[in-house]
Length: 414
Ligand code: GTR
Image 1: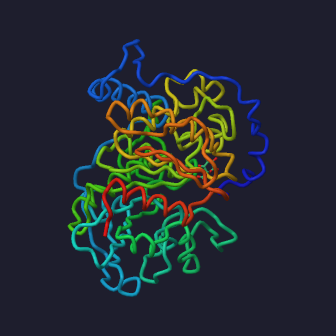
Image 2 (image 1 turned 180 degrees about the vertical axis):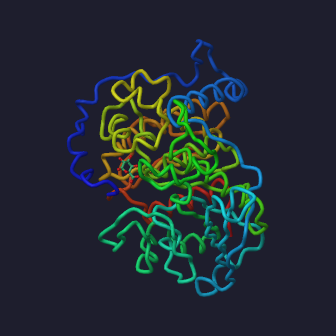
Image 3 (image 1 turned 120 degrees about the horizontal axis):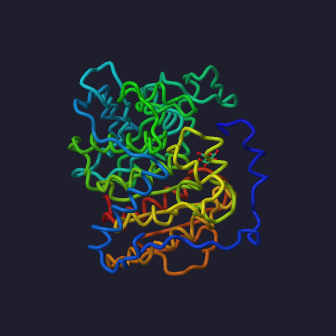
């Protein structure tokens, strides 16, 4: 765990279905002023912008736009990666006109055999690009990384021994074999994940004399913003079909992927892998992690306004099913893991299921049944859900579902 003590602490929270109690979710198809939403046009012009603003002002904070002077530099390109099956490219995105200021290193794998621009999975990683795959040419991050005694990460510095450390979470060979590309960057390039991390991250780098406002973006906002900047770059890459970019995120990065996905309609598919509280899970359902615990453990993730709801999530003007509904009409995949009760699999399912009436406005089918599906049994069409057996993680099983989901909605990649 990133935060010592957390492994024991969640045991003190509610894991008893009989204690969840009752709650009323804020309506999807009615405005705060009481107006009923009955068409896709009304959703797009009235309800969607209103909800997006409520999430920005009360939960995640406001996002800035694309900075002027942003530019890209190719750092390396290998046309014979993965034993000749892939192109491996490393590109640095500079957020300012200078090549010395704020930047993000993108690692891109593309299938070699592609006949044209390919669909791509995009997402941020937790420990540096060099941990995504053991290929020795991938640059080892020089940024702050979280301590990990088991992996030999001490002094907040990455090392050669951590190459490929997270490879099981990215299944690069599988993604390439199915005809997709993969674009990833280290989330710490945007903001190091600790309470004071913003001081060296883009929130400070992009704005001198940052004074944190009540609806200021937090680290989740910074990571989400970086995802959109990665997409800006992908739009300039001729080998990529930027209209077919599926954004994937796990856990805290899953919360950020949802926030990026609802703000940036260019992302064609959104995938939340065990994003839990502050992500896909309903806040009003008292089970597993709570808003209070989230804000106490991670005071830098959300906007200061979110703290107002620490002890009364019922007072929030929104709940997370509304965030998921903002993905509509685009395909959305919400995934849970059974042993990850901290993320509240059922609360993630109910939230995904609740979006069905919004997808219906667009003639799309979400999840019909309100019954939690069995283990490893994905359900739903344009909104899909599974509860995988096993622990909090991203596995080959998860990726196989995402690849098939992308095949279905993008048309087979190869
Ligand atoms: C936990 C946190 C969760 C989730 C997770 C992760 O400590 O309580 O909300 O974000 O970290 O990112 O792995």
